[in-house]
Amino acid sequence: MESGLNKVCLGSNKISIEDVVRIAKSGTQVVLSEDELFRKRIDQGVTFLDKLLEEDGHIYGVTTGYGDSCTVEVPLSLVDELPIHLTRFHGCGLGEFFSVEEGRAILAARLISLSQGFSGVSWELLNLLVAMLNQNIIPVIPQEGSVGASGDLTPLSYVAGALIGERDVYYQDKIMPSAEAFKLAGLTSITLRPKEGLAIMNGTAVMTALACLAYDRATYLAKLMARITALSSLALKGNSNHFDDILFSVKPHPGQNQIAAWIQQDLNHHSHPRNSQRLQDRYSIRCAPHIIGVLQDSLPWFQSMITNELNSANDNPIIDGIGEHVLHGGHFYGGHIAMAMDSLKNCVANLADLADRQIATMVDVKMNHGLPSNLSGAKGERKFINHGFKAIQIGCSAWTAEALKLTMPASVFSRSTECHNQDKVSMGTIAARDCLRVLQLTEQVIAATLLASVQGVWLRIRSGELQKASLTTEMTSMLDDISVFFELLDEDRPTDKLLRQTVDFVQQQKWSLYES
Image (cartoon, rainbow, N blue to C red):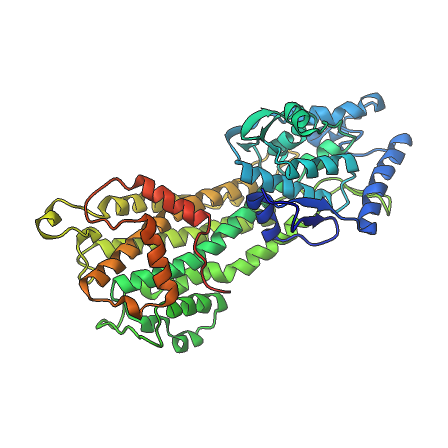
């Protein structure tokens, strides 16, 4: 975990996707702003709610039941118990649990929304959420159970339940009851005030947190796929004119042209133009900028959608304590995140398909322009029993097929639920979870294709067909770095651990790639 340096301040500044990623992955600490307006919003929100309760005000989720039960009036003597019941009856999540990293992102996303100052929550709640992040006490949250409108109710109930000491958390590399973790950390669970259970649970924090992590991974994959395309082009004796800046000046999609420029830079086109005897390479090389470019050009739109949702008050009702308004609406609806994630997983799956086509070309002697069958480095009669990347390419086909299958948009599968109160829902959390799965599968294909392209380039260098001195410093450095953990496949051996390690390196964004 990071020290107190470079803290993310919540409550007065716009928070970026990168801030959430740092909180999630690096343990960056968070603090609440001292901004006067922020402080006033929190104070006045609590005061206004207390005033309404004293005057026997009618507030959804505070003096009424939830959802379809909004017509049920709750006796004032039971109002304080209502939030506890909300956390408990939503404790029905199933499926795998989100990781600590994902849980940190979820806590951060919920805290950022509550820190907009329109949710009617207390300093006690905000401060405990801050302490949980800073001391790495992270709720154990099931992945399944949200339809993405009325927000992420069921998964976020595990955040609310942890706050009151009734759910499990990750702490000190163990899973334990939150009450026990709080005791070890010198913290105390809280009693939820009226509206606070709803404020924590009735929002888009889970899908938005996952979207932040997905965006970060996809941004890196666009760059890595450009680098792999350059390596694959070298391995296949490709024509570097396919990435020429004059060529791309006549089709001015900026992201596409950025990808082409990166590949051209990697191929050292202006210093050592590689003009193959073939006028045109196959589409998986020639059209790579156009394929990767769809993602690259879409990233600013994804960033805008996710950042806006991240910096919104997205529960219901909205509490304007300063203006003394209770505003009932549907800001918990996750349609923007659903659309962003359905679109992002499509762009990412196309990278899997592209990488799969590149490795398929490199292993096939009918298409790989003189590379050995299946990229095996075996020599002499050893060639007859060695199979190189044959099974790895089969694996790539399997992973790609699964990724492509998951591109069906989740957002169109709305299901009327909760006595037809939630009769049109976003499915944003399912879309985000699908996107993360597509990313995982794509990272596997890309890791395998990276190794294959490196094998192909080294085989060309070993045969004297390619001079290492002609490569750019960046390409040489990456080849050398990968060679530290990847011994070329001259003799068949199990590669599962190698592939897992390479996938880990991809997800850790091990290689610095280009300057945007």
